[in-house]
Image (cartoon, rainbow, N blue to C red; front, side, top):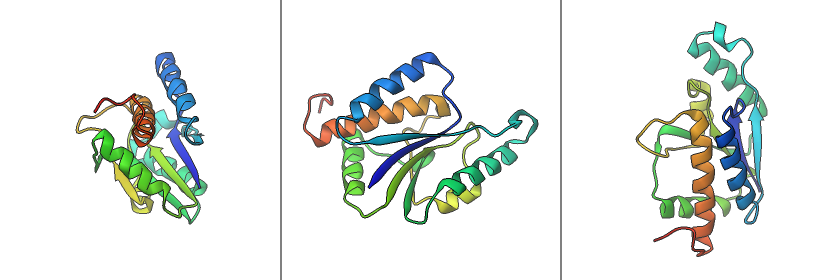
Length: 157
């Protein structure tokens, strides 16, 4: 099974790139988490938000396979404690999915087609964060989940 972390557009801020790289490297000690960048929509500034979401959605759908398990990181998704998230990850790792894909949308969120295709939605907080910040937060929580599953001291219970 492959686990992939998909994002739309490049990360702009150096401090976010650095933080993401730190946690991506740490995660590799536990499992291979491949990061997939979906390029920004061309001329997005000249489009309405709904048009951008539709074009992003089409790019995402073109990359998905039938057996993929798509998990959206969405502000309205199911929220977990860190321990609950670790248990959720462990459960998913024991399923027979071809690929598990965690997807962070663009600045405007997801198109209706992506919501329809998604298998599950996860929320990191009731607060709204930029799609750039969520990348770092998700990777830190994924790393934390790995340490919880291994009873390592990163997470203080």
